[in-house]
Image 1: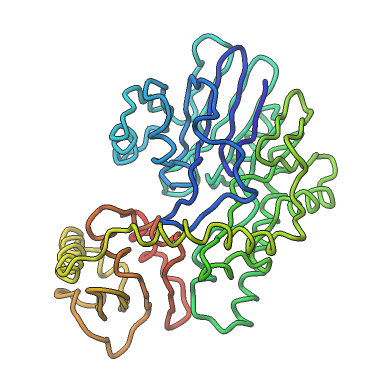
Image 2: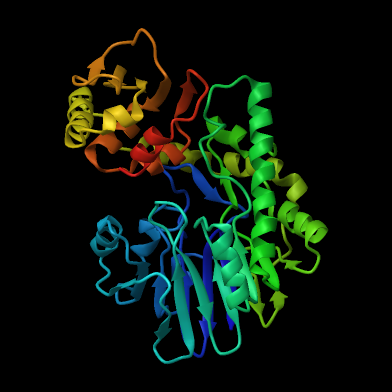
Length: 418
């Protein structure tokens, strides 16, 4: 088995003449112009060999990348999990792929008689996501990507499978706390706590799986827009080097591998495409890349559809329809959300989940629990269905505040699943 690490969560597996490509995010930037690969990509869609199977784990655009998929052969067989919702399947079909196989979780599927087989693993949370175990007659590779697995599942995989190589997440990707208006000292403390918890989880998962070699993956990104450079802070972001060093200190029986774009793993050995980056110079390099891509960043922002004059009417109709469609929704969330929609045709708007009706209105509430400041063009994409709210949030182009300082799981789960 030959494994080429293309970048982030994109991995190419080759065995017995069969090629399986996973999660090809290959066009920068994604998440509405904000996420870029770091280290920079070495591979474009045109550089890929002929692909027999294309596995896509879930709908996030750093895994499901429509601009990249639009450039790939539409006869390629697509492998996804059999989710209850049809949206993911339908979005892939709309790009032009006509062979989409929906796999049952836990069931091994053999790929075209080459000896290569795959099995999808379900998340431990109510999200449409999947991890994948890839095996041939000699080797076994686990790609966890973003799929959160409980300890029992990880331990069972470790006991049942002889995992040669595992790709595991190692750093965070959340709007909390970076987009929240906390005092700086408090934000740094929260950043550091999250950073530590993610690298601890990386080591714990590696130990539970008992993999021979482990790669920190699905976390190498940079934010190049000038107003987002602070999101690259080392207070929050673990580097692959951080993860590998922690693994060596706490589980020396497992070999941590730092794979970078273009590196190839085969039979436990790594062939380097080029020298790894100097992680100590990461922030300076990202600032250099920001200057290099300044015109492209500005052009991408300028290309977004502007908000129409009736944006408030669309906002009102969209959220009122959702609240009317689920009589339990307002009671479950039970907060006052204050939306500052910034830009043309924006304003101060409220969704008051504490009411029994007339939840959406203009103005500034007397008291609020969650304040969301969004660019009007992003709100337009959300309410018009041109964008997915989870992606809009993960663009980190909003600013948030909460009063009291308490996480409302019901609100965020609801909005991110729309």
